[in-house]
Image (cartoon, rainbow, N blue to C red; front, side):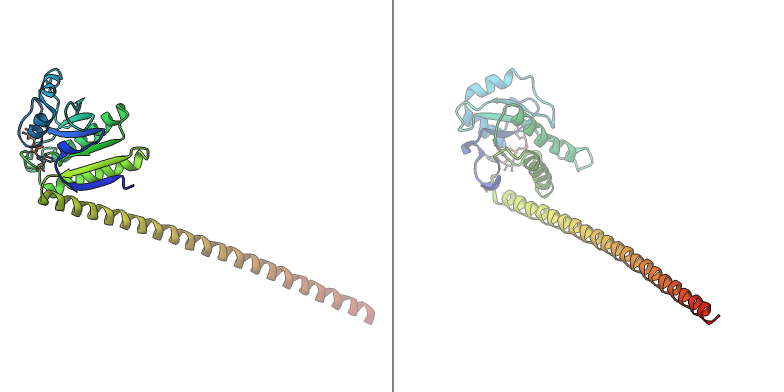
Amino acid sequence: MERLTIMKGDIVKIKADAIVNAANTSLLGGGGVDGAIHRAAGEELLAECEKLGGCATGQAKITKGYHLPAKYIIHAPGPIWRGGSRGEADLLASCYRSCFALAKEYGLSSIAFPSISTGIYRYPVDQASLIALQEITSFLKENPSFQKVIVVCYNDETYKAYKAAFKTLEMGAAAKESKKEEKKEAKQDHKSSKEEKKEEKEEKRKGIKFHAFHLFQGKKKDKNRKKDET
Ligand code: AR6
């Protein structure tokens, strides 16, 4: 089973242990995916959210899923895009990490994400998708028992951006892997040439010994011959 799925669809229909809501810091609902989740989950969701006291950007809080097929909703306010130099990338990565921390704390094994911050908060989706997938793939790598992460893209543009980002990351990983292999081979070459040199040295040493032995034997014979002559 593929542990990461990128699909087009509506996140409120996804049956997973948790779906993530691209919320705002009040946690009291809004437009976009937040509005859709509150409508589908029902009024009880707002009642629970009112007790949470908001949530900082980059952090996450969890509620029940109420009328959703998902058991839980993890609410994560993403950063508003302000040009990219106001810590947006770190805050967005932190959203994903905070969601995963809650998923682990609650013993969940499947989670669905929307593309946090790339709607009303205007984060460029080509950049946001790379950050999202980087966080997701490294979490999956570090948590082999976690079963499934689904990225639910609401429109074509988002879906294409995530597919492209996935390819970019895959190529990056492949390049890293082949560099590692090259380094390993070079190390082995170096080692074997070292071994060859050692063997050569050993051969030479033996050769010298052999030569010395013969020289010695020759001298001994000469001496004996001289002795006989006298
Ligand atoms: N399923 C999956 N994705 C969806 C859905 C859906 N049903 N509906 C929209 N999207 P946005 P943000 C996509 O604006 O940018 C709210 O008012 C959408 O196409 O929902 O983080 C909050 O209260 C886009 O790709 O969230 C905050 O004030 C992605 O979800 C603010 O918006 C995120 O778009 C948060 O803005």
